[in-house]
Amino acid sequence: MVRFTTQTFCWDRAKPQFAIQTDFPNLSELSRKIEVLKAEASRGSP
Image (tube, rainbow, N blue to C red; front, side, top):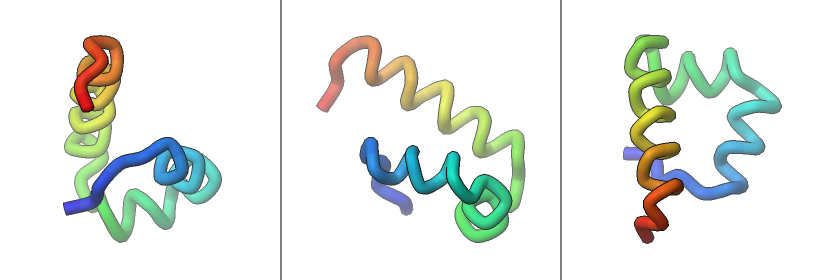
């Protein structure tokens, strides 16, 4: 499982196709994970 950090997000945005192909073959899964991470960040989860 990929551990997300601020650096990971910057790298994913820089190379979205590569990130999606290697980490998230299913684009819907990628979108879902991002929404969960946004919700956790807004709550201040570690």
